Image (cartoon, rainbow, N blue to C red; front, side, top):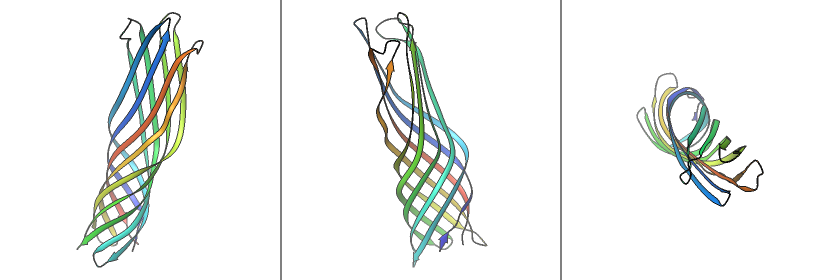
Length: 220
């Protein structure tokens, strides 16, 4: 039995963005070192998901495959305005990450009992990320660094869910998805001005997301 197209989905997304940045600034024989470790974002959103799949039942055992695309509005920014540890010089730094969609294709297995279906799945995930960064300080004549990068990446997804069949081929679904994208980019450099002779910034980005969805679907 083909499992139909999703009509509407609403849910909560809890996103953990692991964002490592290290800067080593060599200025007048003084070494400043700064580490920004992680950002945790709790975000509740309304989103739309479209998916299509195929279910095959051997007795009450489900074997299937499912593909979906989630349109969302993940847009996170993180800013720091403070002083260096070694000298009382102020600096500011801002990082921004954005992703507007996630897609996946995954085999699934499950068990059917009366009008209830329990399933788990796992497979490949896809998304496009946009990252931007800016930095400035007031040491001497002042220094600055800025840059942006975008990348489409393949990650992985696992999940589990429950589906209850209603009348006229409609069903109500509750499911959870965990997305992970490692090494979106590594060693992305932004030079430090004004003369760009000093060591700049090296950036790396990873992403993981937990999605909880409530969906109404139609089966054909």
